[in-house]
Image (cartoon, rainbow, N blue to C red; front, side, top):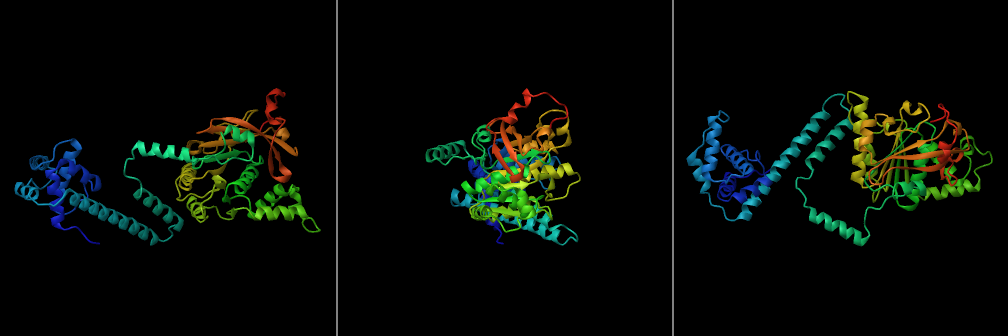
Amino acid sequence: MTFPTATEYCGLLGASGDDPGLAAEALDLCPAGSVVSPGLCEVWDAVAALCARGVAVDILAVFDWLHARHARGESPRDADAAHLAALSQTPFATREAVLSFADKLARLIRRGRLADLFRASAADCLVYGEDPDAIVARTLRRLEAETAATEVPALGPLLAAVLDDMTAGKGARPLPTPWPDLNAVLKGGAVPGELVVLAGRPGLGKTALAGCWAVEAARRSGPVLFVSCEVRDKTLAARLLARESGIDGRVFRQGAGSGPPSAAREAAARLAALPLSIVDSSRRAPRPAEIRKLARRIKGGPVLVVVDYLQLLYPDEKRDSREREVAETSRAMKRLALELNCPVLLLSQLNRRAEEGRREPQLADLRESGAVEQDADIVIMLHTEKRHMDEGLCPVRALVRKGRSSGTGAAALLFDKARADFRPDPDGRARRREAEPENPDDAL
């Protein structure tokens, strides 16, 4: 690593003292604390302090600041008038040369921070028993902090980009669901970068609904990644095959005896041609960092990522409470949606309070609801009544409880359990619950 020379430091400080505007520009590149050369760092700190206060930077102002700091006991060294005079007389060719050196110094400082970052990660690797995935997660967070934007963008270029996208038809097009009524509530579907939380009590078809959306998104829009933490990949594939072929799922579980029917083979061929990847994580819960790694391997990037489900995910780092772990995992899923610029469909459980009385679930019924509710852009909750649970076609209401870019509402669906399929409910059976006699125990 090549370090700046004393002459370059003097040129930076001297020229900045002669030109207050130049001092502010140089400080943008290498702020206070960047200069570490003995005898010069305090002078540069003085230049930074004066600029921050809006005081013109000259030799007298710097001298007064250094002398006052020494008088308050904040510095063992008093201002050196001869040293400051020498700096102010240092010749420097051009304004461009000063800013070029400031940029050079800023890059040097940043390389030093990166070296410290990787040394810290290397030290973590030497700790016996340290979790490798946790080390990776910490390193990624440090890198994200280091690469965070430091410039404040102007509004004008952003508005121009929006207008250009509108003219070219490149706006953020929503990814539609397979159900028109739900699309109407969501104003077209889920927008790229949104975190969609799908919640419901066990047995209401969360995984089935996610599978329907995944298949149709892969059929119409592009690659889809489905990470299953609960259902084995073979079981999930059988459910998708039952839906695609229209064959009762029990045939795939129990066997047909005489070989698969032609409808099953044709359905399997159609599904196999789709860009749909199913990752079986039922044996070991994945971490958000692992899901990110899987998604990045998809050529061109996925149009949808499905994670089944939140409470089974393992946090990137262990925390002192389960609620904090779920909160950090939820935020990681939101960051993943923004990074991949695609919707992330995150399945979640409802707490048992959702079963109390004859009422529909609310946002407060989400398990560890605080963080999940805050991070989600869309929250969809599945609801039906207990007396419908054993019906072949179970009427289910998809309740959109939160829609950051769409609003709220409800869509009526029919859950075909035998075929793991959700269909539109043209007769609105799920909408008529208000007109039927109340039974306090008849809700789920």
